[in-house]
Image (cartoon, rainbow, N blue to C red; front, side):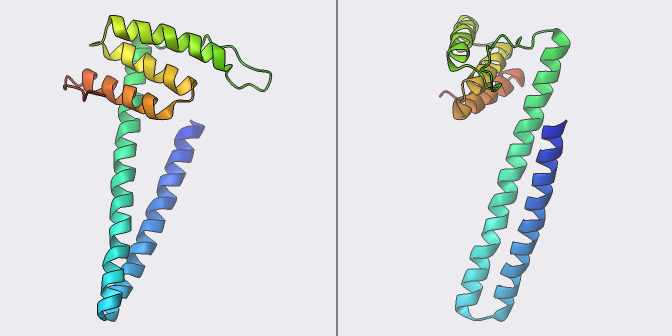
Length: 151
């Protein structure tokens, strides 16, 4: 729940920021000189890109959470079998062991979104966020019956 609140607060702050930046862009355009109009248009592009990125990210998170809920209802969420250091951080060797197991499961059933979901969690635990995101995108595509992009 804390992560959802943090995400919502961050998104709200970003939207306010985009509105403020956009208003500055409009003011620059209203000035009417070629230089300020050019800067105003450039400034207006930034909030558009930011809003697009925020929307795509929110959509991804919502889809991943829906898969997690479905997998939990099936009783298939990965069990936390990771060893932890005294600080509470995940032991790297433990994460690598679990990752190897999840990778083998995914190779054995490459068309099952559940194995890709669990592989994404293993990538995340191994602190490989880009690959975790790609694996989760593949799980979402397989779940939705779409042909996933090849990596």
